Amino acid sequence: MNTSQLSDKFATALVYATRLHSQQRRKISGVPYISHLLSVCALVLEAGGTETEAIAALLHDAIEDQGGSQTREEIREIFGNQVVEIIDGCTECDTYPKPPWQERKRKYITNLRQASASVRLVSLADKLHNARSLLLDSRHKGSEIWQEFQTGKQGTLWFYRELLQVYQGHGVLTEEFARSLAELEKI
Image (cartoon, rainbow, N blue to C red; front, side, top):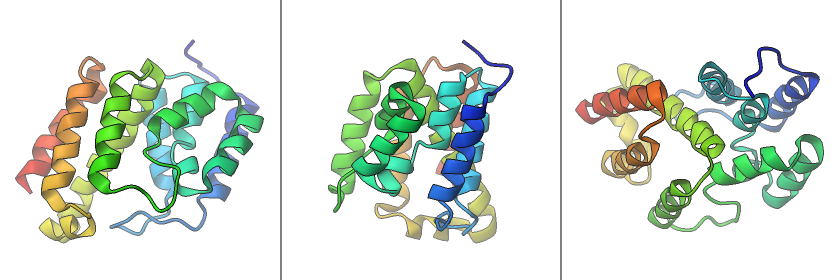
């Protein structure tokens, strides 16, 4: 069900996400993290996503970055099981310390292959916005952006290429992700 109007539940999610991520900043640019969450949410809505998917987009990093299982249960109580299921599908890890990078990424890709359309939509919107942000950051800082990533350019682009295969068939967002990936490979 596509929604042309969002309910009070969406407004609650917006405030909740803002509060939860208020101290977080984007890795390279340093802009407030809520900008990423808003962008992912916008991409989901513009692609015809439901209010539930939009709420999950706002909260897609909450469990991983802001409290693990305790945050998961709080989100479940406020927003319901469907939202949590989508977030869980977009969560690489909710334990600390995190497993090694390659292990986390491979597991994420494997899980995404069997994921629901809702999980794939939110995941694609997330990775598309990340790729767009990297392109913008590269215009300001050049190839030094890759120093911010544990596995540098090679690992990041490997992950994105693998994801692109999983995202095939998701229309215009997949096409834009592919274009962004091609541009990133030129940096």
